[in-house]
Length: 81
Image 1 (cartoon, rainbow, N blue to C red):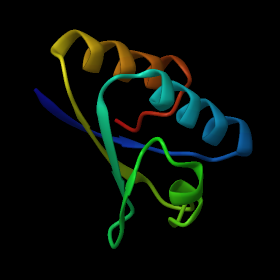
Image 2 (image 1 turned 135 degrees about the horizontal axis):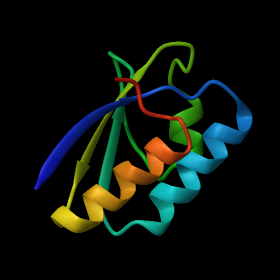
Image 3 (image 1 turned 90 degrees about the vertical axis):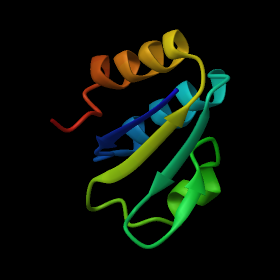
């Protein structure tokens, strides 16, 4: 399954939480800022994006694991409605 969400990373702690959650997930995570695509598990890649605007996140994997990961994004106030 594939699911797309928008996230906002407004501070250092949210960036760290986002990378930690992604790294622990077996899902494939792609992040786009409108111009560039990066691996959502790469801190270096993430820091190369424009973090001042919402990011498009595509999560690919098992339905339950996708749901758990996106729920974690929500519990850390990373999701944008």
